Image (cartoon, rainbow, N blue to C red):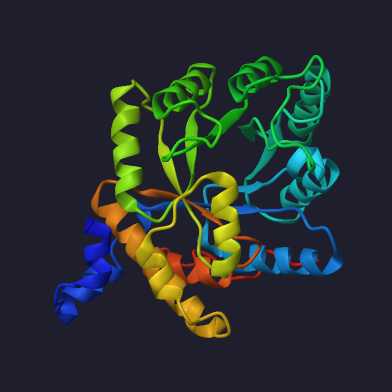
Length: 318
């Protein structure tokens, strides 16, 4: 039995005072968060996304990132969303850029467009293969690897650059060692932060962090947190990105397919417990994959001691 299993199968008795200290662990000044959104593809999704931004903005995130669709399919929607965040809010946006589908010149032009618009933070990713293809192939005269993209962005302007990290290894990596070498190349090229793929076994993250430190990686490695809203969809996500799902997770969601309210309660508790264990092991930055929904992420942040610094006024869902 792993330590994570024991938390759920054999919880220790906790007094009222200890429970409050455990659940409301850190002060706001000790813990920072960032949020990811995806650009809307319809008016309904746009309303949902901006509603989530309105709800989460008062938590004063370090930044909010906006994704770039597979094969670069949301390029203009990503730019429009980032531009509106800049113009309509006080949030700091981070634009995703990938190697997929464009030449180096086109990617560099997109980076310059962001810089000219006032964007100073980029999340640099190799990107998923275009829809209908199984493997990634670098476009003609394009960036082949995320490390190349990081170096190219640094030539364009002095961006702050975040990159992806994979506690269980990238699905296409030859080995965990090879994957860690790739992360080191991205850092050496100029990245200043690594944000991980989602995970549910905290020990996986802690072992990965130790291996990264042993490899000479000194930038912050920020855990990517995914509040579970739909377990069936999570199974599909994990199969595509190579993230494992512990047996205890399936047990907790068993029988809840038609009970979304209970699913949300269970999901929030799982994420709070994950964050609490991570904080106990020296982690104080978290990146939340919101899926354009605010409720769970806001509740989790509240439990961690991150409270609204400002009233909701000042950010509007236009």
